Length: 466
Ligand code: F6P
Image (cartoon, rainbow, N blue to C red):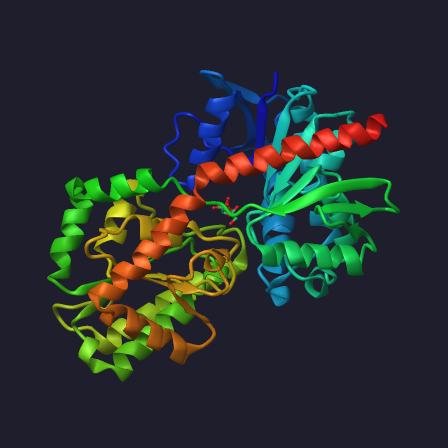
């Protein structure tokens, strides 16, 4: 019987109310098919555990591993988030590569593979997520695992000219080539991957998307699978959110002013200083918006082990303080800047109250806030999404106002156009966006990936048998 084995660095355990759309999608796929979710426990201990901890909920088993402090530091804060993250988000100047963290990254992946191999049966579909775990397929194959192995990258994939800068780019690519299927959010990332294959790995890509490397001795598939959201769930949460005390308080505190909202992990890829500065410029150049608009930025702190994240926090405090010092009045604070995380239900209510949703990353794999903002709107009086052209979501969301976050004038104009957009235009754009969200939702995403993995591996088995 086919089971699903999901592997990711973070695991949303049954008792955890994790907000993310991905966690929700994985849980419902696992419930539908039955299987296992394997990953890090979220705990660091003095030494990496020798046994995984097991929890069961119906037909789903959660197996998680405590990681030793040093292993976790070097693998997660080190190679994953100081090397791969900045490189994959087009920030080579922030890349810090050391052989030591590369070794730790492979060591932790090998520990994962050793534990995981015990759970995998030959008929399983194994779905591995994200840049933390690229080497897993090779390490599982070394342990004799014959099950179908799929990988999905939740970040952008950089062009070969950037990837080349990584001293171990070839090893990383070889590791990807050991999967049966590699999935990306957009055609741009797939194109970058193919360019690498053609230019660097001297591989071949045939018309059906099959990629052959190493003289044709191994082949695999790669494809585009844009992640979506559970549209009715988000819409229903947003419509019911007025009962949430936080939403009522926000509404009252605005005193009829238009709200612009941003919700992002505090990460340098999200373009937060650029967004703050553009808002300051808007107030400077269009004084008619003073007292009329409030900008709420929710930015929960993230990866504080990494110096750039701590630096960014100080920078944002300075910019937000500067704008408020300059423009605030005793009864109006232009920027409300918060580092707390809020429950998903509350966020959908905040989105629904916001006339403008600002999603302006410098680079982003997909960005589900953009999608949730749209799904949270009241269709009779919807808000407007201002979306960076460098978010993967921009490829599907042409009904948003698309911006280049490096262009401050363009950002100011987009904010202005969004705040003042007439109702008929807002409705037309919203309808178009909702149609797209409903067509390519979270269920379509996981079903299409798993169906492709199923077929791909049949082809592989056929070839091996032949
Ligand atoms: O964007 C990639 C991603 O893995 C997301 O899927 C996830 O929300 C985020 O990064 C998690 O970051 P972290 O686990 O480092 O807090």
